[in-house]
Length: 299
Ligand code: PMP
Image (tube, rainbow, N blue to C red; front, side, top):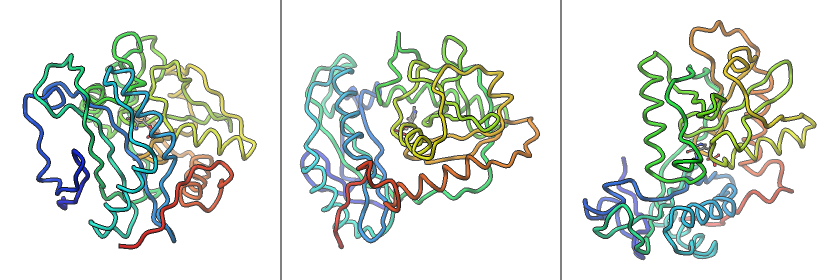
């Protein structure tokens, strides 16, 4: 992995130079909140749904008790421009924007956090072959104990267990249920299913992250006169679905198939939303939603 310049503790330094104490609450207990923000290179760099990512980050900070204000959108854009310049980036990439505790402290730390903004190279997905998925026994964390709506490092251990279980069962990705036994989400991505031309996705009360991509897809579907039902979905419904796909800033639209189920479905709706999502992120359509922040910059 290339040793990119990042912005850490108010300066631009090489990623390898960024240090936090091993006994900090972030290093020991995963106390951090973050966003993964995609940037698509067209004639300009298009940052996708930046305002919504910053809003969710602010919300995560408040809910986990790290009381600080996220830097302004303008400051963020200035930093990103400089990172593009310093790293000579000329392609799609992703930005990891993380608030963390960089001092030695306990898990209950109320210290003001610091932040880093780091570019990571990431190409657009291709439709490709469907990933294999399995419904796992590992349950999604619950709103009553460890709020899944907070994008916090420690919450990802839940996704780790689920992925380990999926791999041990011969699949690539897990599908988790919540404590009520309804379908929740995958590890790091939300889920949609299609049955007889109708589209369904677990509602926000099913212990999912309030995914920005999920919201984008719902709006694109509605714009094209499809009806999307947001409601609790049972395991049986998923097992009997015609199409399944995951979505997320990193996953974009990822078609999946259930392990041990014969899969000869056409995938018409998945292909449609895959292409429309790419049109949206690259600024070819859906401009009226105001999802794109363009930066005009050349290194
Ligand atoms: N669920 C989880 C647990 C995630 O980590 C992510 C990735 N951020 C998603 C869903 C998808 O969210 P988004 O579309 O906002 O990237």
